[in-house]
Image 1 (tube, rainbow, N blue to C red):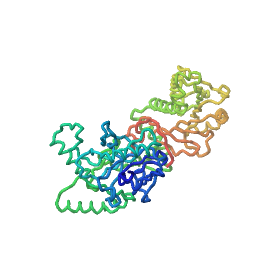
Image 2 (image 1 turned 180 degrees about the vertical axis):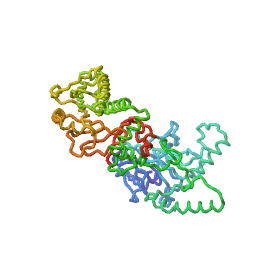
Image 3 (image 1 turned 135 degrees about the horizontal axis):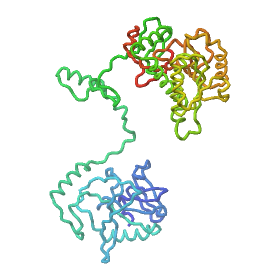
Image 4 (image 1 turned 30 degrees about the vertical axis):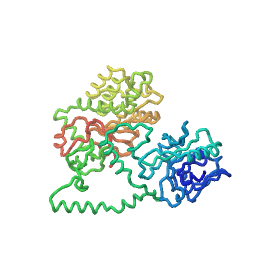
Length: 508
């Protein structure tokens, strides 16, 4: 009786540890309760051994995927290679009450076994009748050999045919359009009709196949053909249109000229801006002549003092912290600035700067020594400064002993060099060096000897003088001199300021 099942294609589920095996039944031993499969597949992969034997205790579920026809079980070893695998549709051996046996189609949903497409056969029907002898044999085999297995054991038969033209007489056949079903069947045959070949062991060599394609030679051939025929394709790499970013100009820019300012004499020192423009230094005589010509054309001393005061105060406010320091939340931390001014035009520029700082809620202490006669520009600036909350002192004893936030130096003037020997001048220099506050010099002169107060920053007007290292970092401010005034004194001038009134200069 067990020999009736020889040659059947079965699927044996041995649980998670051993997996699922598929193959043809080659032997069934009723005494030792073992079953052997030839040409087995383990989890969809063909085994290296030709035959595998299972004990009944290791089998959790056994499904019959295909039952051989009459006379096939004796020659199952000579059959053609067949792709094995579970299907969503199987057959379970059942016994009716009237004693007749038949295969009942039952869908399966086993996800543990691999699903391979079987070969097409010429079977015209999906269901087949079972003889009483096979029925009795199958019932006896199930009762004796499958008893130790789990409760969900069943025998299922593989659905060998994709055709739905013939069905079991006991099953109802739904009505379908023959034309539409025929078209769908033809499409299925075209797509799935070929036999499945064995999967190659090696992966596809993408890099090797890509190296066989000489892209440069192909494009060169296309380019040569287009030059001869006068046509143009869409994908020539050498003729692709230039793509611009949102911050690039479409028009070709002109070459940048960095030396836009030239002076009529030899330049002893040159500076450059952050954008790379070259700013040459001028001598004190040429600078004095430039201011004199500008005053003749209407840029009076009062206007120049006002512009210098505004630019110097803006730079000082930035050095004091800008909006982080000067805001309504920091009223208790008002910065303190000490102004050291001499009795000359340079001192008047410092007083104008102090007035603007006082207007911006900065605590300003102005030091100016007493003189019998003062310049008119100084008198006018002192009159305006007195209307602010700034403090004016004439004695160094009234200056703060604690460090201040910033010291603005306006003591030196080239035309009043004798003031450097005065006691008040030496005392002011000593106080500035002892206070250890950073120093900003406004329009400092060029000294042949070492300057008394070393500045951290220096602010030049219009064009810089050849300042030394003691001037610190040099800044340049725009005091409103027109371009034709520069040309009148022999300076070819183009403004380096851009959108600012105060710019930093770097030694070239």
